[in-house]
Image (cartoon, rainbow, N blue to C red; front, side, top):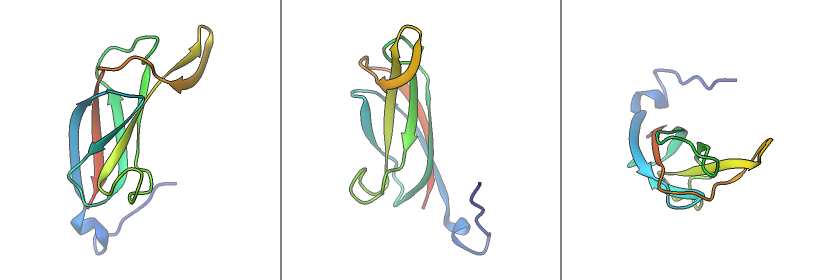
Length: 103
């Protein structure tokens, strides 16, 4: 189910922030410049490898984890050859593009 924001409510003050970051851990905190993040997406720009195959963005609770206005970039890899169950990545230095929407 999609959230729909009326032009007469919060949507008039919505902002989009985007950027690129380089992974340094399986979960990286990225400041977006927004006061509060409502939605976020991330994409792996670097070529995937077996030990860093996917990324996603999470907004967390926007108070403590991550801090207000930040997002978490999570890096994943398959559990083993023949199993695509994701586990935390072990290779870092990968470039990630992200987009966050908030106010």
